Image (tube, rainbow, N blue to C red; front, side, top):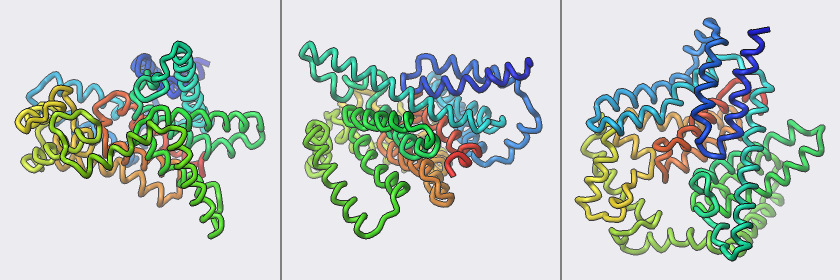
Length: 401
């Protein structure tokens, strides 16, 4: 009886964790600590030994170990400690997911819980925006003022994941429950609306990238259907640009920046990234093999900004805004190679196993890592570590086969 109680405790924490993830990181550290503590009462040496043969476990653990080694070689102790602290889930989550026998029902509940949490987070933000709009402040339907809980780029990534789960899994899981299927249509509509209201350039691009992937899974295409889909896809983009003009104005700014000289004082998201990446590549050329240390990576970037006159980037103390470059600067070539395995490896595994949801996750990782230093923030690390472990769990594969 006592063992059953501990088992229920161990599996209730991840369900709550997935639900709370879209609401930010306020209670997630507490849930992680309780979840880890409860695992000690579920200890199974035979099962834990099997983890040592799980290559997914070792990829995650290797990245964490390399981070620790690089942190100890850094001069900036506070930044080094923060790098270890932020990436601690790269150690804990593989242990919690791969070290224990998860029932299929718990995996499904966790994914449904994430979808529900995402929906309620959207509902809160929409109600908040309506409240401010009633007072004449319509800006709360746009970008950072709308996505007040999490940065829009991260929140739109969460919503793209939740939308993919609904479209790919719900028709199979709830085929005998029409009420839940009907609700899933409402969930999808809300997620799509909020993705556009987040107005993240990458979030919009990612949405239009994953939608064809999801439809290819659901629809058996012929030439006629393919042409019809292409026309509808173009029409959807046109309609979106008409309904959300401010969002597409942000996308248009990318083209204008690519064709003109960039002001070194700019803090515009696209322009400042191009300037930052040039400085990041210069640092990498001088520290290819071992990097400068994860604790010193940002300090080296700030010094480069100052020397190059990038006052906007220096004032806001921007990181590399590209996780591949950020890890390359901090941990050298080994850090980059591990990161490529953890991201592009997901895409290759998904294609090999024909797992569409894993493919969507891999595509989202690669796209976001290109323009954000996701592993420098708690919201990014939690998403990567949590869904990497979930989508590579054997129980998940059986649920989505």
